[in-house]
Image (cartoon, rainbow over all chains, first blue to last red; front, side, top):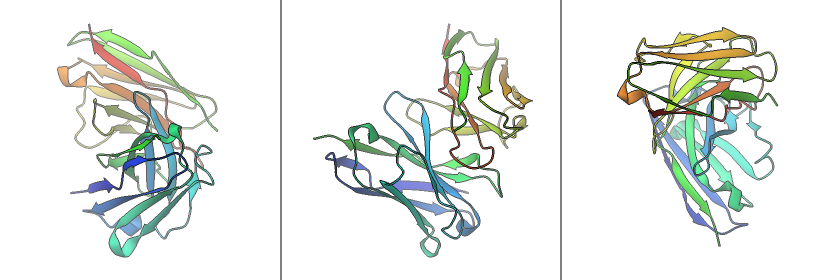
Length: 120
Length: 108
């Protein structure tokens, strides 16, 4: 069964950095695009970034472009999100999600999320 | 970027009711539309993809329709476990793959 487990969240000061990880299991990780989606407290869902199976095809939302970097390590079945220059408005639960097969970029499996709090 | 607009933002309904949520895209997205259900404190769950294809394991009381720019999610015979927030999301073309703002279905 597909499982996605995020880690790395926590409290960080404005301007600081954090690296999120997502451990994947139960499927051929390298064959799927993967994404990060976040949800600020009491707010809706915001797609942030995705990456192709061979670590190509990287796209970012305007809100994080130039500050966040997505990557993956297929040998470790892991997805990452390096977050730099963090701002208070980046406070949210961060989910990793598996994209659908091929060009179907809906999200068929989600992790439980990891909370990032940006505050001084 | 394509904007997704859901309506209503919230609704009150009773168990057994038929509920319809609409989602409008700011431009043509063919049928590249997904619906998700989210319960408080939980991750979203994929309900429908391709505007009308039910994801495996999702009860048949959920249905989706539409193409182009206008879409609907219908729950026929609301059950207690269906009181949640629902989001649409487009996946047409290149990112960003934006979500609607959500529709909270509450108990009347």
